[in-house]
Length: 233
Image 1 (cartoon, rainbow, N blue to C red):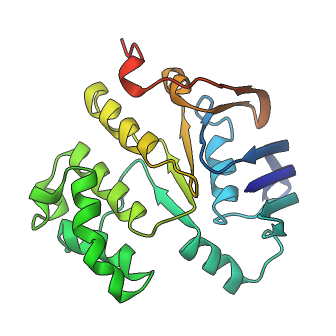
Image 2 (image 1 turned 45 degrees about the vertical axis):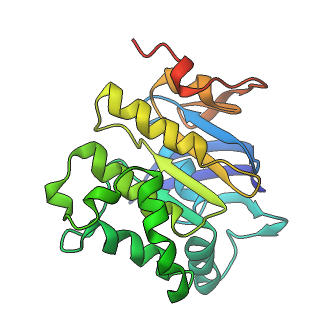
């Protein structure tokens, strides 16, 4: 579905050069959950941004279904982010003056106004339907994150990218969020979760361990666990 081939990423500040990624090679497959695991500053979020078309590599290739996207026009990259990719961030990024239902509806509308009728289903899927008329500042952190997931799913993305989606949540709420994300994987969809929490690796089909901008190890898991099977203590 999506490949990174010999990806390097550098940031320049005057004469100073910071190497964020070095020779990254990875494959994201449909119907799989991939966890990108690493400590803060390891390069995992930079990798996610390149997968999502939000950042371009300094060198290397980003290939989506056989087509290179890192050399695409701005219009083509915008289309890729709009039509292919859904994003879930650590700090929710909900629109504060819109209700829960309106936040999710904006995303559904990207597919076409006729898809707004599906919005209640997405809210029910993540158990926020009863809060549909509330504004973000009336919700708990866990509820806001579930709304952000509903918003992402309403686009029907083929690639769902999640950057530390439970970083601001307690353990019990985190388990619930990971459960929702795992259930989002299907025959047409791939889910990628960036996290520093090694316990999450157990639910993944593929675990990519990054340190200091390099992939240390890629682990294939033929029998991923359910969220309920993980010992979170």
